[in-house]
Image 1 (spheres, rainbow, N blue to C red):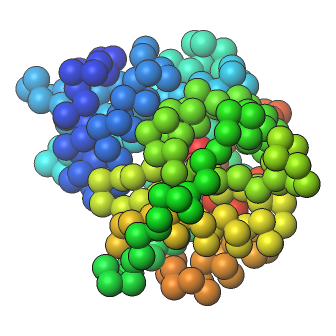
Image 2 (cartoon, rainbow, N blue to C red):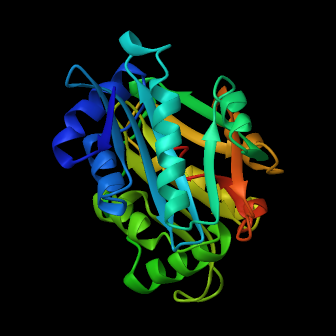
Length: 287
């Protein structure tokens, strides 16, 4: 087995693996990983065939994210995933990143615990499947676009809530799907953001996240506007289980829980952000 740095020529191979796993990533998502961390994404090869991947993203040097640990089903139980994970940890340790984070499946959690990761909080994926005849296409005249000043206010708020600057990533989402960037502002058009949401079109579903709100009213306005703007039959939200109203709002709109993830970290976690203000994360691959 050979582990090497991933390049953009490997995007089709990565997309093949994420599709085999039933994940929702697109080629654009793979390019986001490589644009954010050109030296920190890796592939495993056996007989010159890409059989596994792992990605990292460093957020302002405060903490880094490990994601997209994928192994071709034909090559499982050969230690491919473990070797890729060790490679990401080694890479980030060499660069002095104090805190490493990831979202673990129940199957992966014991492996991460053995490597020093501990639990931070729980996340639950919720899915909505709606009949095509229930989707009403919104009029373009009713889609109010976020202004540059409002986007700046949202990004400033997200730095506080997330714990680090990830504006490069959120700007990428906004550039690709500006209709999914929604904000709630207090009093005046350019005042501080009291809630915001981003979204992206995945391979088979629209994905809402991050979804942040300081109040139930703001959270409700954002989820309803996202549902109005999405034209897909399947929608995904990765919701924080401790949020007092997010899961209630999802359940009332027909979403059902699908799987549980555990947010884990290794290191000091000096910049935890404000997860109590989050309804949903961006996604387990991004944080």
